[in-house]
Image 1 (spheres, helix red, strand yellow):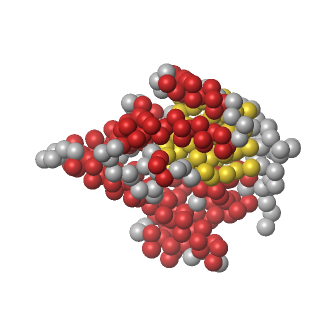
Image 2 (cartoon, rainbow, N blue to C red):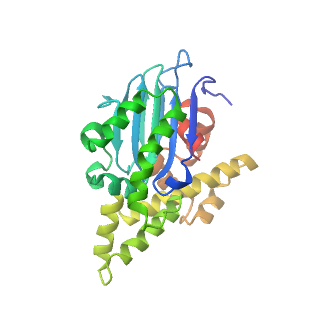
Length: 286
């Protein structure tokens, strides 16, 4: 099978400390400084729709977002914060880039910053203008960090006292989309005894930036991605059986949902995760 994966492009997943497991989901590190002559396709990065919020620090290099029509929009700064995404996203970096990316539970970001997540839905804003003044010192330190381990240590040192102060009386949300989503729904119901379903749904959207229906779709997609990776390792993927086991109406339903969340059909996604450098985030995440 032909592959355009570059042996010198680095991609790593970093798990947070247990004390922050209800706040941070994971961190991603991308380093292409040692990868000579990357093509435009290899410098791309594909990400699926997600209920999580994101923060990105570009320590070296620059990049752009690739829009649906193929045009490019330069990033608004070296430090960006993004809300949940209802659709997949593609970015393209310059040659020789180092980036530190963080996936954060939306409820935690809202609690620690007060940011309106519905205003950040499918958007990316400079952290300097989107978040408070106490984040500016963190930004300066992270942008000067030598590697991903230093970035993670600085981030956790900053977040831990703030998270502990807020979360002393909170149950730590589980780490998978589905479990976090169920926990969020329970909190929304418990937080307004006697409220109507519409009021509960509004509370969920205020905390997460998305509707419960949208969260369920991404939850099911995440579970399906993990199942596909397991079946790929064991042998052939039987899409019709997988669709039935995952709760889709049929294989066509699975295909529509996968395309909506990732932009690709299940088979194309499976192939490109294995062969394309641009799908590095899927390889380390799933």
